[in-house]
Each structure stands twice: as structure tokens, then as C-alpha cells.
Image (cartoon, rainbow, N blue to C red; front, side, top):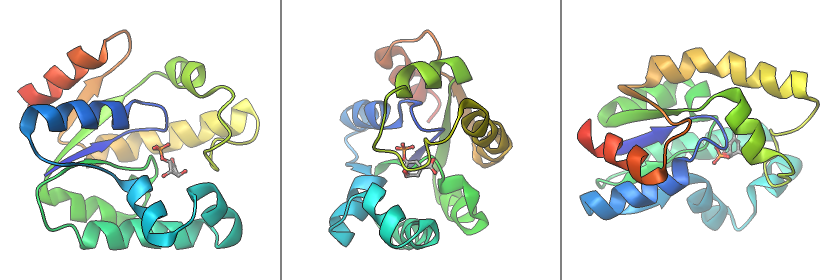
Length: 159
Ligand code: S3P
């Protein structure tokens, strides 16, 4: 089991797909799986049911994982201690991106409910999470300035 963690825009989905092609373990995008289960977009889930409801779905999803997969998690998966404990079952790889990289990639994004507010609010969320990503990670990979191919190779090497 491989869990890719990191802030929104750190490249988890792209890298998880590439890693899964190399390891032959199926790739799952957690947000997408939750959207399909709930028949609702994450953005609408946050608006209609609230963040805690979505967080419960993330925890349920992790509890029910049975097969070896390469899982691209949502950026907030590390917020709950139970999730961090559940991920100890596998190798947790943190894709660590600089703040400037995240801003460059997410400017104009309207799909992510927690990519909101002014720059100070966004940066605060980023800073607050750094410690949790580091704490949950078995491996940290700096992604800035690297190609997806290079990053996925690094992931494979550390498995
Ligand atoms: C979230 C990140 C999103 C998604 C939800 C909440 C977060 O996933 O799970 O909008 O709290 O950081 P990505 O990291 O794939 O954008």
C-alpha cells in the first residue's frame, strides 16, 4: 500500500498514476472515489453537508481499504489522527512542494473548497499542515523543479 500525501497542488494524482503503472498496483484517487460513492462533487459536499461530513468519508474510506493500491489522498487527510494511524499500514510518501509552486499551480482554481480566502489565509493553512505531513511521512520527496518522471522514479526507489 502506497499513500501519497501533500498539500493541494503538490502533484499527488499525477504521480500516483505514474507509480501505479510501474508497480502494477491499482491507482485510486480518494476524492474521486468519495465523489462517486456520494454521488456529489467535493465542492458541493462541503457546501451542503460540511467539512466534517467529508472528513468522516475520508476516514471510512481508509478503514475499508483492503487491497494493495497506490492511493492519491486529499490534502487534508493528515488532519485526523485516526487517518494518520490507518496509513501506518503502508508506505506514506510526502510530496513536498514550496509555497510558490503551490500558488503557481492553483491560482484560478475554483474546484477546491479549502483553496479560498486571501493569500494570508491560504498560506496559514499550508504552514499549519507542514508538521503533520512530515510527521505522517515515511519518506519526504521535494518536488520543486523536478519532472513527474523524476519524482515517480524517486518514489519507486524508496519503496
Ligand atoms: C483538501 C484537499 C482536496 C480535497 C478537499 C480538501 C484539503 O484534495 O480532498 O478539497 O483539505 O486540503 P487535493 O489535495 O487533491 O486537492
